[in-house]
Amino acid sequence: MSHFSLLDWAIVFLYLGGVTAFGLFKGGKQQSAKDYFLSEEKINWITVALSIVAAETSTITFISVPGIAYTSNFNFLQLAFGYLIGRVFVALYFLPRYYEGELTTAYVFIEKRFGLGIRRLMSSVFIITRIFAEGVRLYTPAIPLVVILKGYNLFTGVSDSMLYVVAILFTSALTILYVQFGGVRAVIWTDFIQLFVYLFGGLAALLILLGKVPDANASLSMLAAQGKLDVFNFSFDNFFSTPYQFFLALFGGAFLSMASHGTDYLIVQRLFTTDNLKDSQKAIVLSGAIVIVQFTIFLCVGSLLYVFYNGVQMRGDEVFSKFIIEGLPNGVSGLIVAGIFATAMSTLSTAITSISSSTVFDLYANTEHGKTASEPEKFRFAKRASFLWSIVLTLAALGFIGLEKRVVDVALSIASFTYGGLLGVFFLAVFFKGATARSTAAGFLVSVVVMAYIITQTTLAWTLYVILGSSLTLLTSLLVSRFEPAEAG
Image (cartoon, rainbow, N blue to C red):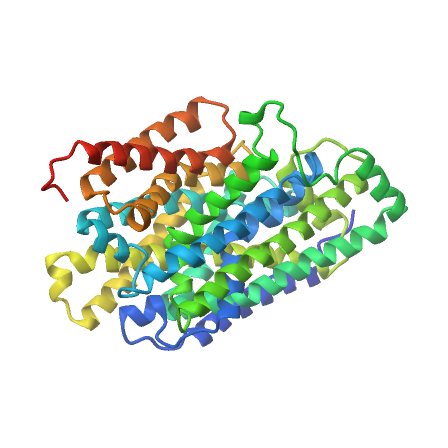
């Protein structure tokens, strides 16, 4: 077992300190709530695309995707092809609608179509969903740190739960600092840097593993013979309970990406920081292509870990963390751990700015006080909202300590309670002129209730969740609208 040296610890702390300082520097001074959340100083589309990838994948990809390849094969990659299809759809059909109105949140368009009540409903659902989903994503970086501390008998006598608490609080404290003072500009530019470190860490691990396995060609042949490198799964066995069956993964990935990148303000906020519609479209499509490359890198890491550990049975979520400590040279281990925590900071900072922005523009700005508030008052409220949600998200992450289920599936399942309903509402707004506010609300609520039952009480593949949820919203809304009196809506 190699030693997590003083050099490794120095790299971790210097890198995290550097990222925080860089975020504060790039954030600059904001003069208004809109500048704080949307950046009046526009950002180039390539930077935005890279920041999208950093925000959406974060530590869950770093830790769990290698574990998926370790315990199964490359079927997970089918999702990424679906993600790209979904993003092209968003670029063609959703983004042009957003740019027709005032660019503050994704839900302004919903108000124009269905009224303020539905806008508030969508914003509230987004906020609640993000609290739980981002809580999972903030919790995951604590996994490698606890492995490190336990592996070298540091903090002897301290429980695992307390170590998780320390890791989460440390990550949160640094993130809150640069978000409070730097706003969305700080978030996007730190994401830009963090993604390169994150990908470099994955590539470094891949190259080191290739050097450690006894015979690379023989190892690849063995993996192929065992089906560990299979990308496509065209089998129809247990079709509805197999998430990575080709059609379920492709279409499920496309629908999930439409929801996450077309209706979820966590991502849409970043698209609003570009110069124009065309740049936003290029950014979202490029992000889809980068994700395919990224997933491939980390799945390859997982397959080589299977060879390195001779297929020994272990938790998928911990296999890469174990290798970071045991198999990497001094310095590289520290850089990868720093990258893990940096992506956790990206996750939290993105959630803080998007939830706070929606709180200010969708909820507060439409109250009696918000309508008459001066720009300095709105700005002060924005800062307070940002700090409050920082605390709430940190507490949510602490609540996931001791999680048993595979982290990737949990995070995606939480979002799927509402993603289908949200996507269905946007489908209605864009493609169905006959839909009304009342029928849309009915469709959304039916979708959430039914999906809550399906997710908690059945073994249906999670890749079907958004497809089913959006279909339920559409069908219910269209049915209700047929029986509404003509004057409704």
